[in-house]
Length: 112
Image (cartoon, rainbow, N blue to C red; front, side, top):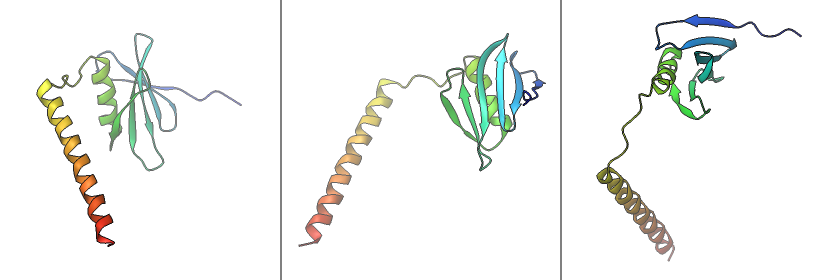
């Protein structure tokens, strides 16, 4: 059994080098350090992972998935939610819970 061939792709992506280590599996490194990967599912969806193997998202193209990994490697992240945003999320969660409770109650009462 021989080791899989490694194909490197050098692109101007913030010093990140991409290597294809297996069919549908691409690994990113910068200065010899692992910064993330992209795995292609059987359905053709590209799933991007950061340097800690945390999924970053699902993408239609390899380029979009690689861009997500590079952005995280460069420190480009979404801003931290504000207190107001968190309050809205909490309110939405509570409202959803009440709606589910009313739906279940209405269903139970409909039986009588």
